[in-house]
Amino acid sequence: MSWQTYVDDHLMCDIEGTGQHLTSAAIFGTDGTVWAKSASFPEFKPNEIDAIIKEFNEAGQLAPTGLFLGGAKYMVIQGEAGAVIRGKKEAEDLASKKMVKPCVWNLVDEACAPDNDWGKVG
View 1 (cartoon, rainbow, N blue to C red):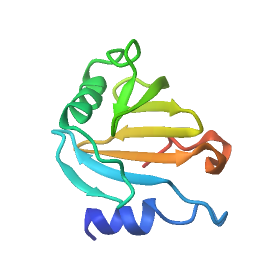
View 2: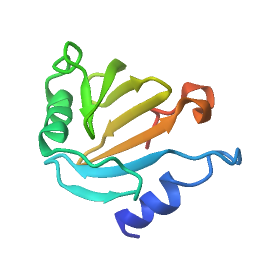
View 3: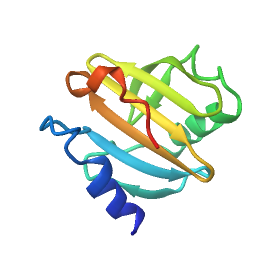
View 4: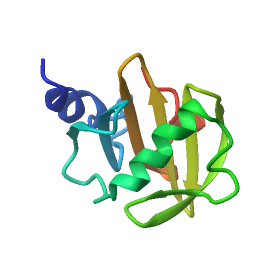
C-alpha cells in the first residue's frame, strides 16, 4: 500500500462510524519531504515544516511563537516531547505524531474530535 492510499483510505475515512472525518492529513518524512497528503492539506512553506520537525528534536521551541502551517498560527498545547505536537486555532485542532521515519499530521474541526482523542495517531 502506498502512503497516498494510507492517507486517502485510512486517515481521511469516516471516524468510528460518526459520518465525520479529518479536515486534512499528511505524512512527511523527518527530513521535511512530503510522502503523501490529502487534497485539502494547507499549502505550506518549507520553513513551517522545518520548524515543526525541529520541535520534535528540541521541544519547547514553538511554544513562545506558535506553530505556523499554511500561514495560519496555531497555539501549541500540551503534547508529548519528541513524539506528539498538538496545536489549536479557533475551532480547529492540529496533531503531529513522529514515528521512526515519517510524521503523520492531522487537522480536524473540533466538532468531530471524538473525546478530544484527535492527537492519538498510530
